[in-house]
Amino acid sequence: MRNKRHQIASLILKTNEPTEFKLSDLYTWIIWQYPRELKHGLCGAVRPPLARHGWYPAEISRTRKIILVHGEVLKPYKTPSEAADWISNFSAGDDK
Image 1 (spheres, helix red, strand yellow):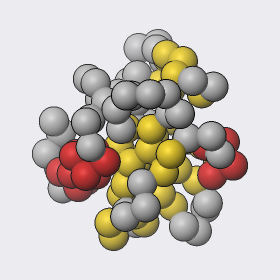
Image 2: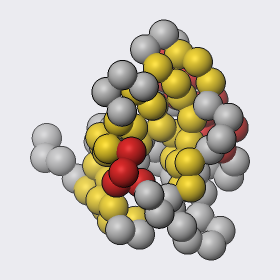
Image 3: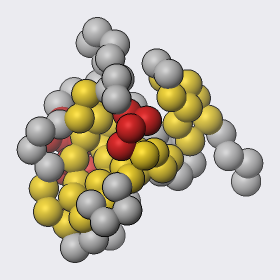
Image 4: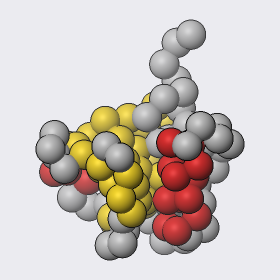
């Protein structure tokens, strides 16, 4: 399967797997302030600096200082909490 991608604002997201970014790559994006603990880091959400754009689920690695943005979701979520819930469910084995 080929890696499909789409561009949102200044970043290109993969549509078939998470896209890895350095924290500095997301300097113009909005990062949700209330991430939740996971076994391997934090789950949260990010969104581009575009009016009325939704939130993408994101996994944050504190040790590697990277963020995995899940552009493979069918569409961005309305709230950062909903996006973080997707990560929590996905990590628990419930692939929505």
